[in-house]
Image 1 (cartoon, rainbow, N blue to C red):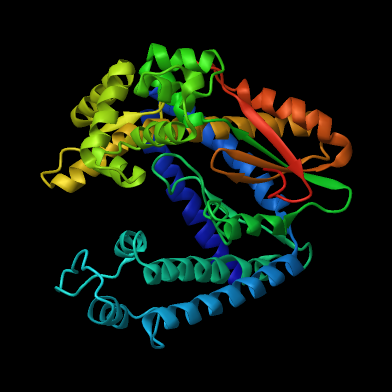
Image 2: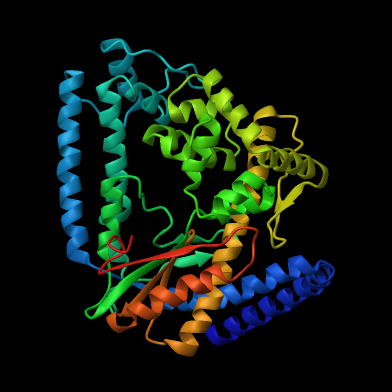
Length: 439
């Protein structure tokens, strides 16, 4: 009976899929660029199947040690929080936090909830943490607790007993930009901006006699911005192999590149990446910790020096409002249903997405092209090398030590050659005994 039911389900599933195909396939044939994206997704799915099957080896004792250390630090943070507050309290209770913050310690109320209660959400904690120690302790406590519960406590248990490897599941049709998402476990969200987060990568290891290699695109979204905008100054910086953040700082501050200070380069880097995500002067001011008027002046000076970027942003917003979608370099469509919304914040969010989506989507297309090309090369030339993960703009490999020279030379060349843009694509490789060392 079970076989009969399974057969009926399988046949019905296939029949309905054929019905959908008959409706959609003519539409794809009428749009050759979209058909190209569909063909890329089919080819990517075959490479992803291999990556999922390969899995990546996990070092359980390393995770166990990290969990213990995180637990100790979390307990220490609780004790320190109690000392600052002058009493024990539930660190996860908004009500108790409100009483201690605002009634006992007299911290300023930043905002209120919809019900009129004094908010202690993440944004409020981050603002208060700039001036007060208790909110800073709470933020660190939350960050480490999440890292422990999500990764160091769980990852080893998610490895299959037969091979000691975790086999994540990649989804191609979840993120609207075309980026892959990953679950069970989610490999895309392991924090890399904290020391503790980066240490989790130490537990992704190579077997004896093997190495882990990481190949990722260098400043890919900025390069795509240069290509899409056609801005001469930005194109020149990449074509000449300049440090683009230093070049931007030199332009914005009106000084020679060799005179740029570390802080000025940091400002320029924040501006470069902020504008990619459609950041406003308010958002930039918050990121840099400066006045909104000063941030607006930086943005204005940036657009004066890079007029092509300003033109691209204006044209992209206008096109999105007219047609309801934007496109990647290769023709992937990214629909923006809120682009003409009467709701101001929703419309503004869609406008920011209109700027960023073509860049993030093009980067997603490029990494999928790379996966396909690299897997074909591995099958043809180096079957002992296995692709074991894909994380944003990065491909991760497990390889015999004897293949290190080949991979270091061949994979960046393959990744750089998948498409021709107005600026060179550059991929870099790092290697080590674990994923952290490979960076």
